[in-house]
Length: 318
Image 1 (cartoon, rainbow, N blue to C red):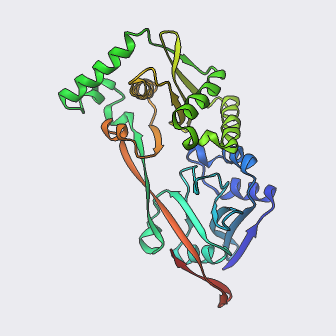
Image 2 (cartoon, rainbow, N blue to C red; image 1 turned 90 degrees about the horizontal axis):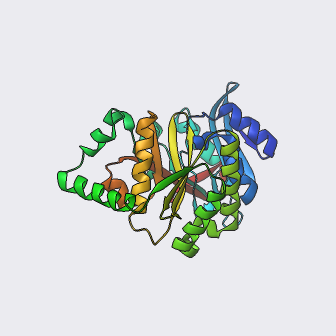
Image 3 (cartoon, rainbow, N blue to C red; image 1 turned 45 degrees about the vertical axis):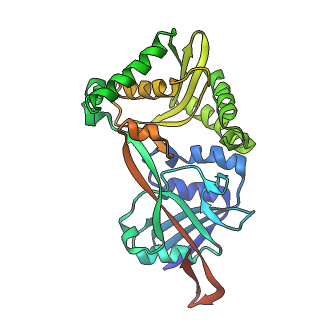
C-alpha cells in the first residue's frame, strides 16, 4: 500500500469531491469551506492507494495550537470540532491503520458515523449522541406523533403551546436579517459559551447562511409573539433531510423553544421529509420529544514514539 498526503488546497478540494460520499449537508465541500475560510487551518488529506485504487481517505486539518490533527476543516470550539457526520473511509482495519500511521501527530476524530470497522479498531469509542425525528415512523402525521406520549404529557405540551399561541403567535420564514437576531439571542443567552462569541464561528455561519440561501437550501424560521421576535432557528434541507443547525430564543417568552421545535416537526410531516436532524447535544427536550437517538463515535490516537517502525510511525490509543 502507498500513502499519499495532499496539502495543496485546490488538490484537497479535488480529492474531496472525487472520493467523499455526499449523503448529508455536511458532506458538501462548499459547506465545509464556509468554516475553512474563517479558521484557515493547514490541510493534510491522507489517502491510501493499493494496486492503483484509493482504498482509504482521511481529510484532516492541523490545529496549530496543539499539534493535533482533526477532521477538515478544524472548526474547533473549546478544543472540540463542531461539524458532524464525519466518516472513516477505509476498506479494512489494515487500511485504517495505514492511514493513522501516515499522520505525524496526535489524531482526534469526533462525531464519526458508525462503521463496522469500529468493531475491529481498538481506538474507536463512543462520542456524543445525535437526535433525529423520522416523520415516516408516524405516517407523516402529527396526530400520530402525539399518540406516542402518555395522556398527561400530551395534555401539558399542548397546553404550553396554546399559551404561546394566545399571545398572538405568528411565523416568518427566510427573512435574512433574522439571522443577525439569531446570533444576538444566542450570545445573550449563552454569553461566552455561545459559538458565536468566537468571531470565526460567527463569520462561518454568515457564509453558511448565504451559501444555503443561494442554493435554495436555507430555511429560517422566526416565531413572532406580541409583535416581537421570540425565537429564530436556522436550518438546511438537503437530500430530503432537514438539519437544524443553530437557534436563539428570547428569555421573555418561556416555552417558545418547545413551540418552535414542534413547528419543525409539523413542517417536516407536512412536507414528507425523511428526517429532521437536531444534531448532538444533551438537551432533555430531545428525549422528552421521543426523538430517535443516533450514537456517534470518536477516535483518539497519538504517535507512540518519534522513531519509525518498519517505515511507519507506531501509534497507540489514548
